[in-house]
Length: 260
Image (cartoon, rainbow, N blue to C red; front, side):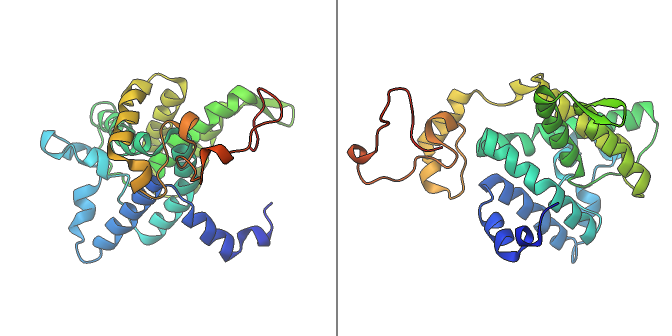
């Protein structure tokens, strides 16, 4: 249980200022789109995912529906849930990869699966919107990573596979919270499992191309809070500034490095 000291405004402010670039962009887009719906109420219908309205001319819905929210509280709760997960993902894979995935396949795939299920299996036309589909996608990916280190957790005499925890959460939320999409959340979690298992990693451009783009456009130097895709070479936020290469301290023993 976190203490009140950990939740003080200074810590929250520091955390917000340390958010990486793509996470900031996506959160800003969510807030901006909700604000825009105040004078332009038709935007909500335009951006939401309505299975019967998805066609070649409205494929954009598969990418806009995670950014649109039904109400202010809906938006706030989803932002609180998705921000730390997005930040963790971007810190691991880099800003370019995060931008490519969350403006493309991570909306198109779960949205497309949901549309197909609604139209051809369930014969329904339930409208969905909200970043919760990303929440369960990222939770599923995290659960798969945790499962490798800790395959099970115990509840009394029962051992529960760690990877199944997002699915348990999906059903609990569907039972407790009205007007949430069980199918939509399951679609998001399913794509998260596919990503963590490596089946859809081909959707990310090759690392050589991403590194070339970074160096060609000097993204590390031009964009604050940018996370390099090549963290093995550049670290999380690029090369740290130094006055002279000759002043870099060396390890007293070969094969050992200084610092974290």
